[in-house]
Image 1 (tube, rainbow over the protein chains, first blue to last red):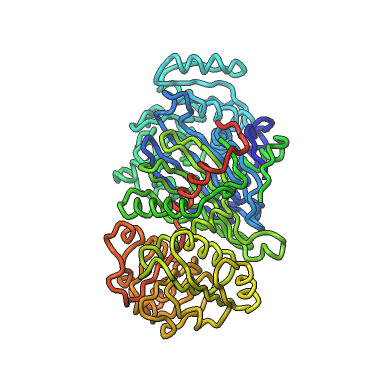
Image 2: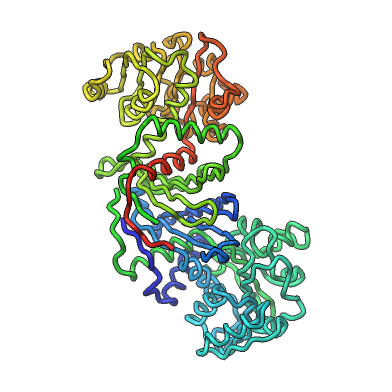
Length: 313
Length: 313
């Protein structure tokens, strides 16, 4: 068993996208064993354990990840993660990975998979970013590995953050602007921790695909419920989405029915579900699945070189 | 963050017993956050994730443990475990421990805690062992760290195993014998993987305390349901016991009611529940709790010396 402190170092984002797409296919085919995330409350936050296996892909293991909003004031990341990969045949721990950065990347890759299958075009995309943090960057990078992006319009609660994002991305035509301007695009990506809808239904043009990434806990939401009512809404996992995804608040309030969920990204990847017209709005509601963590851990191990040998068992 | 490959090396068993008793106290006081174990099926077995926190004791983390019955034929242990300890205040991973041997030890310590509080005597005990494997040894050692043992009578399905156990323990008066002989004792400890009752009610004398350790999955049982019906039955955790402990089969079959459970070991440790007379039979039904894994990991770190530095975060 080896420990890898920087497993993301040699990752190719297009390869990550393919591997993430592959586990969503397996999810769609029902080949995945993936219990719900387990939450354990701590004084200043919580930690989650995310176990899963996909024997058909040789994957088994668990991610352990915390969320402590007060950490930045202590000089620590809000979110830190470790993934333990097991040999499915014997249960032997094979590798432990620092998964903090991998968590960002696998979330970006899920967005790229959804965009590839649900956007109306694969080139010349106008991308809108609501939120300009590390996850906005991960989404943009993963999407750019697969799709052609013409322009990016980015909004953040602090204008300086959006402007800094634009400066950090000179290889794209990125401009900071208003929320309404960002929402007027082909691919809208929301990555904020908002607890109130930010994106109004009327700002979103026909045919837009929305990757709703930010809402990952009960009470969080970024989209106008009227937009969800209008759109074809896909989720990564139905149970997790209803519990903690973009749809959690409007479903809990009865603003939309759980029957509004059109299916899962796995079904979309398999071609069983998907966009039915170029004019409808589609939404991918991402909560983050343990199988994404296992997939990116495995591909990272393939390219990252040797780790620290721990001598187990 | 450090990795510890042999964290059990300097452990004092009496100290382990005290720390395990301490987390059962916390459990009895309701200070524990401990979701049910999560099971993930694998081709040749399964793995379980066991997260928990006890903020009042500075404990947070998760154990990952597999069960692959075919492993010994491949030269691997059936059960292998890792524990990840987190700082409750920030969620930062602090240590990763090889917890294979710690798992044996913390199970032994829970038996010792139950024996101390539920046996009619603290000295001159006659101990009966049903099963003569590594868990029988862990139970005997942990109990001997706290209670005076006069004689041990051991039974195993293979007589040679019981005889080898006797030879391995020259510091005790140990003899291999029949199942009925082993069951006729003050403290009966069952540690087999049986799926049929082994210990008949009529073999167990008045006043015996039974540590029922072996049953840890649906379908497993070691005790005559009539013995459970006769006894005062305590569990480590009610939900886990009904799901996978000694009582799981008789409760599922309606042979005993779930209302027969007298309470938890935590309540016993706190003195809120316990033996009411010297003549009644008491049973502790152990399924193994995540809080035991955290407690033994923490005490092991205090005494085991430095591990391998992993540089996280």
